[in-house]
Every structure is written in C-alpha cells, then in structure tokens.
Length: 255
Image (tube, rainbow, N blue to C red; front, side, top):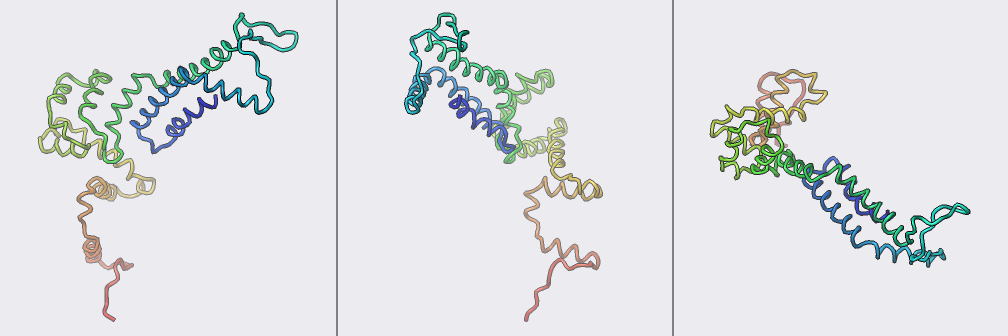
C-alpha cells in the first residue's frame, strides 16, 4: 500500500495546487496510471523480497507461501478455497488493492475526460493563453460540442489556416479585428473583457463609480499600451487640473 501511495502522492499534491495547469495535471494522471500498472505487472517480487527482509530483521514468522491459506483465528480457522498463501497475498491482496486504485482513477479520469481536459487547456488563460492551439479548438468543437456550433462555424474554423499561426487569445482578437470578423464573432473580445473584469472588480471597486472601473479595465486589458505611459506626464496632467491637497511629485531644487 505504501508503494501505491508513493506513486499517487505527486498526483494528489498537484491536483490540490491552485496554480497547477490542466495540461500538466493530465500528464500526471497518465503517468500515474502507467506507473501503477507497471507496479501491478512487475512489482510483486520486489515487494515480497522487501517484506521477507523486514520480517527477518524483526524476528517475525513468515508463513510458507506454498501452504494453503488459513483465514480466521483460533478454532474458527479454516482453509480458504484451497488457495495457497502465495495466491492469496499476491492476487487477493496485492493485485486487488492495485486494481481498486486503477478503477478509481479510470472512473474519475477516463480516456474521454483526459482528452476533453487536454484540449480545453488551449483555453487556459495563464501566461497569456500560451497553450492556445487552433487545431485543438477545432477538435474540441467537433468532438465534444457539436450541438453548440453550426456546420458553417466549424468549417470556417477549419478553413482559416491563418489561425494556425496565432499564439494567444490576444492574437486571435487582433486577427478578428483586422479581418473584420469581430462583427460576426463578437463574443471573443467581450469574453476577454469579462475575464479581466473578474480580476479588476474587487469588493472595494464595487463601491466606486463605473467610470473608474472602465478606466481600470482599459489599463489592465491594454497592458502593452499602458507600458508606454510616462508616469511623470500623468502626474503633471493630474496636478494641472486643479490644486490638490497633497503633492504627488516633489520638485527637484538645486541646493
């Protein structure tokens, strides 16, 4: 059991981390299944040797593996279906425990679910949608969401080879604007704005005016443009509007 827990520990820890991205998690699931299956096929002899060594070091009696397994205690002890100790410990305990773990993993992460989550990783917003792939989006639409998209929309996605060169959702929004397809697929940039709004609209900003929220969203969404802003010019413009109670910038004077 400790060997099974050792294999699944990395997966359990990874799934509990909020920073874990979908694709890495699915790779860990696949690797965990492979390692557990390998333990099932080739791990018995190694485990048996470890158990025998432990028993010998601690003066624990080891039953003869060729004898019939006896279950129960005291006068209620009796042979179990005429199976040997080796058969019982290997198949009824060792392999049964591993099969139970594999069944649970297959139930929670079957092949179809892993494929769905792996393809969905293309929509992961982390690192500016670095995992965005047009081909994965097409597979996701055609295989898992055929009822949500028309044949025309699927064909448009497949025929536009320019989508293959897009590296992020921002490139997609720019391409939609340049080709004027943003008027047709207008939800893309809206979803981008709503995604940013969830980060910007905190409890404090909920009590502020909509204009302030709008200004904050513009700066957050258009980060590339915002980096070009000169802070000193902004402060000077702010100070020139009217007298302020506090000084934002201390003038440099020659001593």
